[in-house]
Length: 387
Image (cartoon, rainbow, N blue to C red):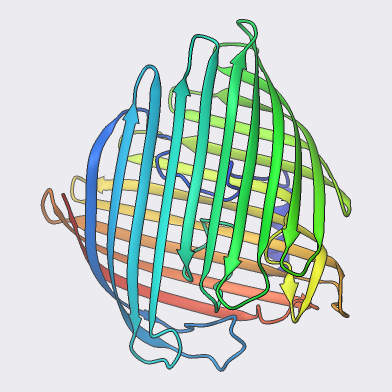
């Protein structure tokens, strides 16, 4: 795992994802055309060989049953574009004493509205409640024992000063709140970004951000970020964005993010990201808290339509976090987390499909970071109905 850690770090040190901070929070990110409101309802049976890996209790495995309801809508217009994606699920574990029933809900809502020829309003919002958030969403990547609520919102006004120069000025807010825990954190920030159009396909950016995080333990931490970057359409289907600079706060560190999105054909779509930055969440262990958490994240996914009835999905992500400046005797430490998955969907008809997936997670901790050493395998087979 350590070899993987440094191999990935050398090949993808430039780092990130999207505005919420992790990969694929908005599943409609690359959709350029409108799609009508569609619902998905499904049932699934599965097996989890390590239901509560971070609970500190003995390892437990269990079969489970899950029901879910989802909705998706994409509207793209000359003046206003918006989309919403939502899912709620209920899972029953049959073979464990704790977490026999878990509820998970996730909603993303995004809006881009042109107020006039020079001004526009952009809003990106994400909400989650539950335990099984997964490794592509929200602020955490490790299976938690307590259910938690995560909310992130980013709202900005864009103004075009000339044909080439524009600015975006925005406010961000996020909150992470656990049920029955003291790891809660609220973060408020603002930013200003200059955008200069070099060509029809390429934009250069320069951004300043300030944020302040308030912890349930009664302490605050502020951070400033200064970065330059680019957004370029490298082909009719592929877009690359990058941002590189420095962060100033409890420690001064490099900062970088890089994303690649390509709808190669109607059959093949791929996404990839990398990010290196300071992070404010998931910093409390054993009644102590770390003031400094530096994290590298990389990941990617491929969707391939093998035939009109079969779609294959492959992906994975890797993160390595280093913790320092701990309180209450916490020693410096860190942990690595690797998540790999594969899935297949078979369309029986226009409304009914059969879905299967395999998900592998490996976590490895060191130093004062405890409770993160585990392996986990999940298998799932389900039936989906769309209307």
